Length: 491
Image (cartoon, rainbow, N blue to C red; front, side, top):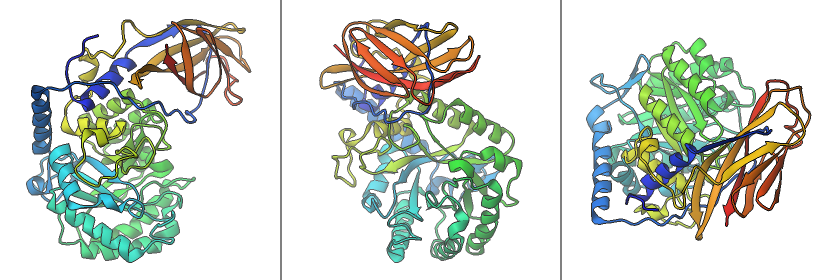
């Protein structure tokens, strides 16, 4: 099939959205939880380029870089209502990237790369993630002086590159920020003194409270830490995490802090967190809460697993419509889906598209504005080998009546010359309660099952039989379940 010449980043995103539009409905049964290991093979579709395409890409990059608010154009930031604004009161949206743990991947904190993020990628913010409790963490066995110096250096490099910088106290395995409250107060007292002269700094005081930590506990912590920063920087913008890995912004909206220039963190991973959390974000902003998406990824919440491009683009469209700032995780070459660089890339600056992971290509396209999220589905993009609405043609339930399932092809790509397709299945039980279910899915031609999750899968010929897993067989009347999925190699 013919395909318009385009940049790799734009083509990957357009392909993913085109695939997501190709749903296939059939009669049968299924249910599920979150995927357990659904990494698909890396995309490697052949793409041609010409001089005009390269020029268009460069123009898009330049336009994205020129249009973003930066310290040199917007100055020191503050919060007015739900909006982050510049020194003159104009709305500001920050869009950029987060480091991984500074103790583990310090090499990406360098001035040439930060300038690259600004000038080539179109980012206007970088987040410096200082883990608190893990190995190498500030409150465990990390070298505190070295970590402090790295944070200070990162802020200086960001200022030189015309980027805003978020100093992130990365609470994670320690769950409750109060566990290291004294260390947090000492750290922020020291760093806000050192960084007081910089107008590009935002302070994030607790990354992801979790493990049952309540909003009341987070709020009490913030009420002690914020004054420490404000003693040195009275008008500092501060980001406060929310319970359940910074998802419960509704709790903060119901009982916000009595403080100016405060934003509340919401984090998401697009393959796990979908419409329900998007609705929560929209409702919080509509209620008057200023929200900052200070971390997100386009895979599942583990930081690895499958990518959900359709959900990712829906998130970007929502955040853009609300003028909510967002920062993507993570700057590393770690062998996980959320890393922006390929595992075999040893560079720390001067990256080519071939050095980027699939998430890295997607993010670069978003920051550059190469493929607007709302336009990709209507772009007419075609995928190699697509002649119809998808290879899955139908299926049927086995046993119980009243069960039905819908099946959607959510991704398709080529790797090593072979076509791959990824499907998701959702089950609805319209009959009596059941304790188990099984369905048979028919595909066109031969296939090899490459990966699967949240079910028991048995391929035979051109049919794939899917039965419930041990934990998702019971479906009450009217109940439905999702996130059952599989990847097949065709031919």
